[in-house]
Image (cartoon, rainbow, N blue to C red):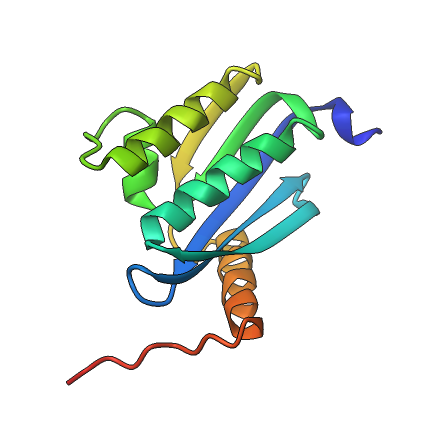
Length: 148
């Protein structure tokens, strides 16, 4: 089956920031029949964790069109991003409002998109989290020590 022929695709995303704001990365994976079809992780520079999550969602939706224009289920452990995208929570910051609008422009390219919050220990979210941390490590960015 060609990658554009899928009628249904699961997308898992995560964003990570070392410091808030601080050096950040975003990652996503595409899953079909419990198999990873594609994974992506990128360093996005200085950002907040929320911006990293929104960036992962945006980048995933842009590329998912190459795999499916049907139904997408997008999973994130970010309650804030999922609630804001679903219209359940107010967006208090203009930069997040802009990212939210960009996501809604991408959503119309699919038959249906569901945004679902899952626990951080979800197996595919854990993979995305590991990818983000490995990318930040490869950039030479260490975990920040908490002050006592």
